[in-house]
Length: 76
Image 1 (cartoon, rainbow, N blue to C red):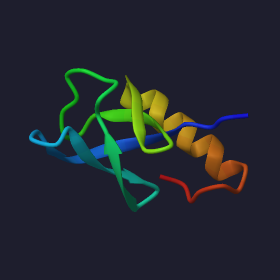
Image 2 (cartoon, helix red, strand yellow):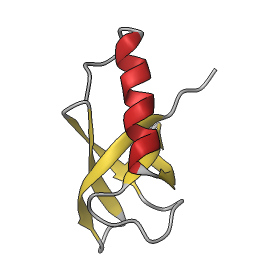
Image 3 (cartoon, rainbow, N blue to C red):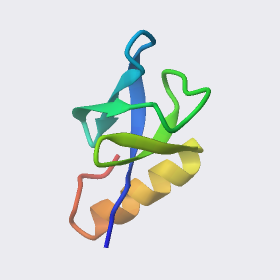
C-alpha cells in the first residue's frame, strides 16, 4: 500500500523544478516534475519525494486532521 501526504509548498526553485514543502511542520524537498502551475502556498499530495497533484486547502486540512486523529501527525 502506498501513502501520499498533503503538504504545503513553501518555496520553489524554478531552475531545478524542486520545491520545499511543509508536512506537519517538517520541511521536505519535493520534485514538481509531475505537476503544473504549482505556486507557493498551494497544497500537493507528496509520495516518495514527488508532488503527484495539487489539492485544495480544505481537502488537505481535512486529510491532515484525519491523520492526526489516527495518531500519525499533530493537528494542523
